[in-house]
Image (cartoon, rainbow, N blue to C red):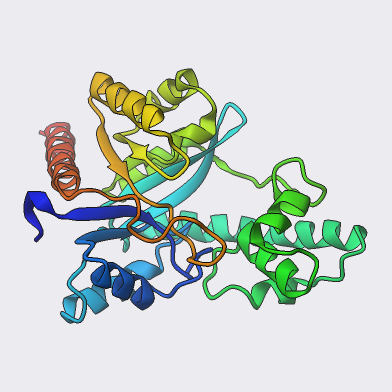
Length: 292
């Protein structure tokens, strides 16, 4: 354990969802950059967790792995991403829910490909799937396929021209409510943390989402300015929330943020574990007392 002096990147994606790197590659990078802990928070997928646990338990990489997931949900029509930390990745309820979410991702993929075809772009579902190593298919895989086929200069160009919200090939995806996302994380014995709150647009909406039952807020993220982070830290203190942060790392190509570039003190991990223990010891007490 790193003690109070280490650092952690608590928002990382692997090739099990829309990241470009394998679990082992992420652990190797973290080890080489002296990052003490990471959380692999794949979109609607927990497939990376058993592999990460096995690799770290072997002693090959001196990196602590915090079991995590990033669940796509919505609140009042706005897309909300909820991070789940210290989850039980063997929870059958969580596994079933994430499996259904991935089915919805595949349905969306077929619709996106159809729209691209209508735009005269000769791309197939198979072209996109060739860019994916996991089951959680998303727009980043479509973007990579567009670049490979020569329809976009790079990843960002593909998003800007075809895939961003309101772009010609954008297709909204069926999402669960943020209430249900938080409930799902709690039932899997995890803590729910609002991811990249800057995407919600204003602090009022952030406060509303937090009141849905979130345990924490991601106050440090590449899309947050220093002033934004300071405001979010104050908001977290007002609501009694834990604070997390990370790079939201996907790939080292065509991006300006490397794994670990935004890292929080390891003390945040200790606080995360402390809050987790407090939350579930109290919850266990309340559940048992109901049947006395």
